[in-house]
Length: 205
Image (spheres, rainbow, N blue to C red):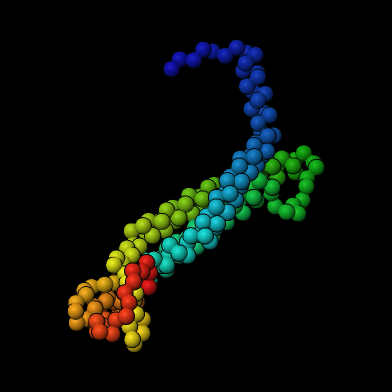
């Protein structure tokens, strides 16, 4: 694409803007870091609240190995988001107690060094954010794909010898067969029909 040649006045103006940018780049980077900081703080708080309110119930539905996997993923994600937030805070406000320079040469040297630090902090903060959200998505995927479906036909059976709960397998004149949902879930529990006092539907055992 052909561009029209700039007039001497515009060239001079762009040169002046370039010189001004050298003095304002640190301030611009700090504002950018402040935006990341605010976003990370809000996101970390949201994930914390959701994990506190629903995480325990949802994770309890996972088989034992996957509970550990999902919990580890969420814990690592939370840690990464906290680290990303701290890096963004460092980039926004600088290092506490840092020396202030008033002489031109020293101030310029410090500014250039600080610009490099802020850029690295923003990059690491964004990286921590991306990794944290990836781990959150992985934990959600584990929860969705490995959550056990609740057992159907759950009943509570009151007998003369005690109360039992499980999935109703069969009901016959001579006995009632249940499949326990806890303990040895592969071994059916057979109860004498004569001992049964009451059978009621159940939502959980």
